[in-house]
Image (cartoon, rainbow, N blue to C red; front, side, top):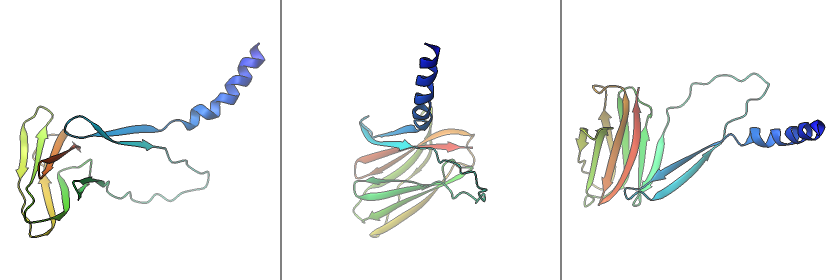
Length: 148
């Protein structure tokens, strides 16, 4: 009996160790799930690996045909928000809120048919989690930003 349990444990151990990924979800303003990501850990090889400087994390998504790119997250002060393919007729707002709902940043960028590049300054705010809400033509995308 003990041998059977030990054999079963040894057979199931590799399956359990490979299933250590994380699942992340993204939701729209109405609370509908719009994206699901499975993040799998990178296996380390036994050979020596050179530690390269990690690139700044970049978040990217589509919002009604416009590409939204946010770098870096987590931040120590300034977050760069880039909106592509905006036309002069597009209505756009970018706002940052505390977790209690207080607005700490707001902008309504204008463009002449091109890209918009904004710098959201959170350097005067305390460390914590902030919500970045981007609205383009009545379509809203909300992002969680961590200030270190």
